Image 1: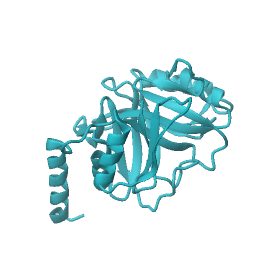
Image 2: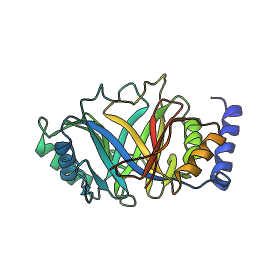
Image 3: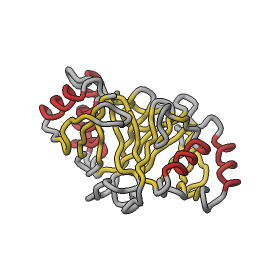
Image 4: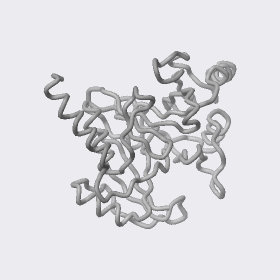
Length: 264
């Protein structure tokens, strides 16, 4: 990208960060939804290795701070390779100790496969990338004391700035930069990052990570606001019977990521 094109894009981002989206209620991260053949084992794995806590009255998920990690029973039709989902991230106060734990568990059964060993991300944090053997979900583990627990979701797009602007327009969030180095949207204390990758991207439906979700105080108001912005709903708001939320709807991002919009 030439500097003549880059300056307007940067200016748009700065203006959005300065004033937000007029009249919009910012959503909060609510959950990530994974597919597992044995839900109880998946919940156990995240409780043991990611520090997730039980959800009162539910056996199909656990909580990582403000974000729920939920599971649907079934066999995924594939990993998220080829989709716009790169990874989910968790932060620990001592990453070296955590990686020692993962190496001791090893690979196989309920173990992990370490894809990228612990290393320094200059100006950011220590990081590593691993895959849970039971779910084939890419997980980035980092050492960021300011944001412990569920840390981020990383997506992919051919136009990361444009993707971040779309998510900010749809769901709010605070345009920010982690330690002045990594641009993203901040929802409370959880980040949304987008890295550059060439598409097209396949749908996340039925994959190991099927979708992630945002919560609004009023789903009807949120749905109306999305439609005014030209964002169509895959599923209109409806009541959820015996579910973890009262009502839900679905949106599809420009890069084919399924997003659930919920009202607690």
